[in-house]
Length: 383
Image 1 (cartoon, rainbow, N blue to C red):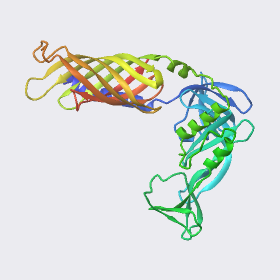
Image 2 (image 1 turned 135 degrees about the vertical axis):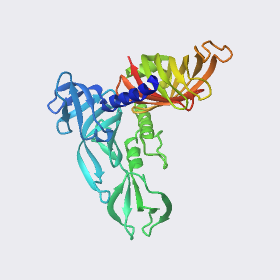
Image 3 (image 1 turned 60 degrees about the vertical axis):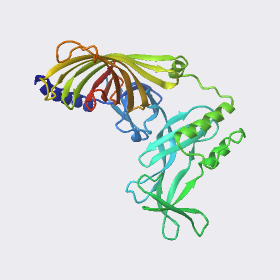
Image 4 (image 1 turned 120 degrees about the horizontal axis):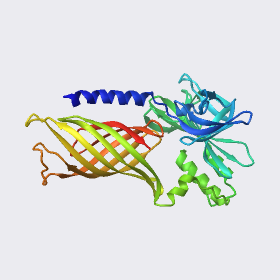
């Protein structure tokens, strides 16, 4: 019973600690006067990074910087941002749009003779290219809302998030009209023409009519152009690590609580996080599990188990990790107080997710067979 009372208190404490922790990343910032500040950088919303960044200098007071007071900044978790006069549009009320040209922090996605930049704002993603001799150029791709006469009414969209597309028709003026439940729109996309003009000196590169406007495809074609120009990007530490099968390794410690069904308990785990070739992340670890069973059939009893297993990251993003696990469960204690060798070893399969709080701490939740549908949740610490 003491264990049953302790587990909810432990979960409450872990949740409170996770929610109050701040996401920060080490890096640097160049101020408008050219001075460099080093510390940890952070921002509550990635889509506000275009307008502001907060730096936490070592032993200093947090300072907020905008494109008017800084030239560039870099953080290990979010990348390199530089200040440019960017053209985009804003829609504060959701009914009208305003064309804007102002200094913004743009994220450099691809470096080389032709650079690719990204601006993330609430209206959507805006991409830009810049050659060594020319100023920054927007890659235009958006939708214009039309009135009853198929004329633009002043509202723009980056994409259909909530509207369900119904049909297409040709207007009297000869362009395609997209009819949706939230109005009629015309697609404006000159980014393909802009890319063709920028890459005219590499005729082998073709921009197909159905070339998609997203970070993956834009990065791929611009990297291809830079290779055509003889550019060899410098290898980052992460890329050098990927050249060998065992790249980076970090030790990890987990403290989880298991609740659900007829079983409750605590789990302590230790292991490694290994980044293998091509960003292949695996996690060999050993779990020590101790739990209380009350199945209303026999008397309540305690069970201990050792669980050697390996986890694999199916999805690994900055703020979310989806992981599958496989291994074996070796039981140390059963309800009779002795090990039943016929049942002592069982297959262990599981799936879970991880939400990074900072570079040391994550919130981890999983469920596994043969203990499903019990849920195990708690903190994961990287050392």
